[in-house]
Each structure stands twice: as C-alpha cells, then as structure tokens.
Length: 419
Image (cartoon, rainbow, N blue to C red):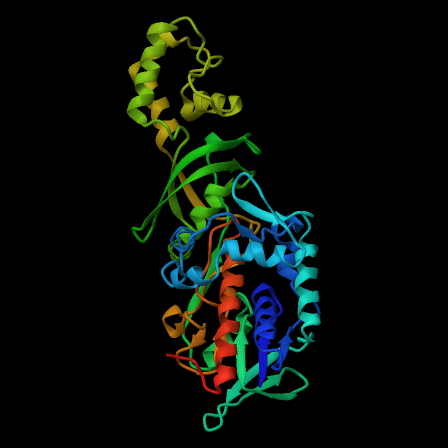
C-alpha cells in the first residue's frame, strides 16, 4: 500500500493529507523536485494567498473555468468552496471574505496556509522527499506496480499508485505523456495586454471601476468580459482584462497575441444613449465648457485625453459649439473604442497555464487515468484553469481531495477504480 504523490504544491499536499486521513496505514510519499514546498502558494496573492472564493454551488463555481467547466460540475458537487472554508477553519485557519468574494486567511499571510498544510501532513505521517525530481515512471503491466526513477541518483522506487500534481511544469506533462496521455499544448493564461494608443498616453495608474470588453481574435472568435480596468505603462490590465485573457488564452496564443479590443467605458450606456445625453447637455448647458463639465463619472485625466484625442480639439469648446460629428465621435470613443492588442504584458500577472493532460482521458469521479489504471491527476497538470479570485486553488483542493478518495478506494479493494 505505497503511494507516490509527485509535486509538493497545493494539490499534492491536500491530496496527501486527505489520503492519510482515509487510509492511515498507507505509505504516502510526497516528492518535490526542488528544495522548497508550496512555493507558488506562498507567493500567491501578493503573499496573502487567495485560498478560495465565496462563490458556492457546482454550477455557479464551474462557470469561472474557461477550460474544465463541464468536467468540474461533478467534483464541485462533492467538494466545493464551502467545504474548503470548513476544512481550513477546522484546522485553525479561519478565512475572511473580501467585498469582491475572494477569501484569504485571517492573518493575511500565505505562510499561515502553508504551515497548516505542512503540519497536517507531518502529523499524519506523510513522508516528504525534497530535491527528488522524478525523471521517469514505468509501469509493470503484469503486476500493476509503478517504478519511479529519480533524476541524477537513478534511485528506483516501487509504488502501487501514483498521483501527478506537478502544476504547469513541463516535467509533469512529460511523465503523463510517457504513460500514454495526450497533452493539450500549454500556453499562458491570466495576463495583461500590451497596447500602444494615443488615448492611453499619460494615463498610467488610471483605473475604471466598470467597463464592458469585447475581444475579437484573429481566428474569428470573440470573447466578452466586464469589470475594472487599469491603465499601465505598457497597455491595459486589471481584473476584467486578466479574466478576458484567460477566456481567450488559446485563441490569443494562436494569433501571437494580436487582436482587437473594444471597450465601453460607460457600460450603463450605448453609443446612441450617450449621443442623446450630449444633445441634452448642448440644449440645457450651452455655455458650459466641455473640458470642465463631463456628463459622466469618468477620471478627469481620461476625459481630457478623450477631448484631445484624434486631433480633434474640443477642450476649449462650450457645449453649444459641439457639432453633430463631435458628439458622435465622443460617443463612439466612450462606448466602443477600438484598441489594437499587440502582445501580452511584460510581467506575468499570475502563475497559471492553459493546457495540460487531456480531460477526456481522466475519470472525474476519482481523478484516475482512463488509460493507465493506478495513475491519478490533480491540479494544474490537467487542462483546467480558472479565473482570478481563488478559483485555481479551489480546483487544486477539489481535485486533490477526489484523487485521495479514488486512491483510498483502490487501496481498500486492492484494484484500480477506473471505470
């Protein structure tokens, strides 16, 4: 009854703990290629760790996964965000909800979460093996035993069950491929957009609390998102942009990160309603200076750029001086401004990969491989990625918990659980 869990990250640790609780007699080894465990968790959320989300319900949760939403419906019915909250609280780590639904440890320190996982695993007898990268996994089909080969030392370790929880690393994908799995090509997810546009000049740091976004990719696909947007010195970022990048991750990669982005800075309006407001202001406030009196709640610096943009000098005009063409141009800029996306941001906003083990090859009741009985997967090694807000960690907790259940059932019956 020996189990090797490869990858000492969130999914790997959670699976090891859950399995040790279900099968106290099992020999569980947690392998980590580097000398550090839970490194991504510790630096996530600016060092605070966005553990999960306050979104509950399988259908509601699964909607936040551009890839894997259908497959996660069943798993979330068995272990969802509310279960995560209760799990950590029962182990002395209460989580606090922020206004946007994100949930952090009450200490606001990710090390609190990391220490909880480490202490639980140690208490339950999980053997941690750091600086032991697994170079190869072979399976003896006649006995069902797996042989792990440690890189450099060439040490060989025999186990009955293997869980791969290596995140988006190439090494984990290679192990899965060598055992017969197909890998969806990994590409970045959750990033900002590189945009050069006169309208955004000198606006670094300006944010918009509410926008509507439409992204038209070169392959003809169109994606939508809404929410806050931030102007950076290289283009646009903020929650809505980051979420949009996740939804369009593969299409953007195919187009080498060239696309057209349309923004409505006034999501409660459309072009026609904004035109009507300008006409009303022209009639009711003819002597007001356009630059000093905006009909809308917009950042002042942005309003000035809109007025001065495109070579149309409107700043010195009164509303009585606005022509029909002026009003139409302003309305178009405010509700349907087109930007050319020419690349992804220079800095990776998050650490999430789109791509991984093909989902049709995994049994989502147990997280066991349909191709190689006794092999399991959890976390980002799968072709699953969520939006920002705790969804990627929730996937790690859920799939790790299910994998532990699948392995425990197999250990108790002495047979693989694949259906």
